[in-house]
Each structure stands twice: as C-alpha cells, then as structure tokens.
Image (cartoon, rainbow, N blue to C red; front, side, top):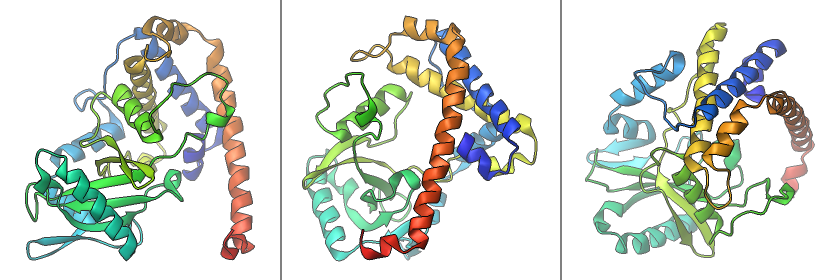
Length: 298
C-alpha cells in the first residue's frame, strides 16, 4: 500500500490513513472467525466495478486481447509488453513438456499446443522463467485456452525465518498447496509440474486486467478506503481458511489475535520502514543500471 500509493502522488498522511484502514479491516474480519469472499452484490466502489466487468467478459474478448487471429487460427500477440518471442529452444522445451503432460490427462487434445511465448508479468517475476501457452482447449478459435507456466523459486523470507517451516516436496508444491488452502476457489489447472530439472506452477492465465484500477480514485479517499477494506478482509479470510494446517495458528488463536491492539501500530510502523528500504534498494539498482553495471553480463 505504501509503495503503490506513492505512485498516485498521495500525501503521506493519506497513505498512513489507508494503511490503518487496511489493518483495521483485517483485524475486524479475523476476529469474526468466519472465512468469506468478496461478492459482487455486496462490494463497493472500484471493487464492484471490477467484478462487474469480469462477469460480462467473454472468452473470445479475453483471447482477442492476448492473441491475433488468421482465419480460425490464433497465435499469441508478441507486443513487448505482455509477451516476448520465445527462442526455438524454449519453444521446443515447452512443446515437449506439454506433450508429456497431455498424455497423462483424460482429454489430451485439450492441451495441444498452438503457440508459446515468454510472459512478462510484474516485478515479482523479473528474472524468472515464465511462459504463456496457447492450447487448443475446446476448439479453435474461441474455445482456445491460455495457460501460465512459471518457474517456482524459494520464498525470499526463508533465510530470515526462525520458525520451522513444513517440508515440501518442491517449491512448486509449496506454492500450489498454500494457494489451494488460502483461496476460496483456485484458478483452473493449478498444479505443480516439472520440466527438466526445474519445477514450475501451471495454471490458467490470470488476465492482468483483473485488477482494481487505483489510478481512477479521482482524489476521493473514500474510493480507496473501500478497496483497502476489501483487501484487508480478503487477507483475513485467507488466513482463517488456511489455519490449523501443519503448525499454523488455529482459528481460535487467529480470532484472539484479531481482538488485540498492540500489533496494529507495530505492523504499520514496520511497513513504513520496509517501504523506505525498498525505495533505497530501487535507487541503488537504478544507479547501477545507469552506470552500465548490467551490460557487462553481471
């Protein structure tokens, strides 16, 4: 929230208020002990607008935003923004993997590969091997499906944790297992897979458009407060849904935590420190980039 709101040129006092609103919503929903989900009928502001847009979107419309048609054949649109061309080696690697994967499915023809590209998706995926795969699905052109294949790496916090963590079969198994626990309904095809020596997460492609457009707040803080309320609630519901698994806090402990107050000011303060550190790290990286550090293959 702190880093994102800086992009909206919001005053520090307004950002602090939104952080407090997020934490208050999280604590309030945690204290209820009931895991729910965001519903279109009861949502407000930008969240309600987003859910309404998703409901009215067709598969053909979504495919048209990511692919181009020649007759009944679709190919992934290489726009340098969402997708980059894959090399011949990368394409062959993905094709071979998908052929083996399809052979193990009840409907192999569904996963027939039509095209492959490298996927661009957010700062969290920088340097991570990731592909978008166009498959036959239920038939061309509008029954096609887009899949997301992303390399799974260890969580960045692991070296700093003192709490013992569960033993996972692989990093992909960790990510998929936790998504299944936290989410009320997970994405289609979500599963851990192996391609060569690396593990990946396979799932249906999540449209980048399925995000709240915060830039349209138009100076009305109440619109952002409603978003923060939904975000805080969603986090609380996810924690309640996943509680009690492999040593994690049970619902009673989470409910008790939600009723306490001391941690709220502490976590807001920590968030402020982390945001400042992230800004310093970014400036260090940007200066190194400008100085040509990365052009030397380092």
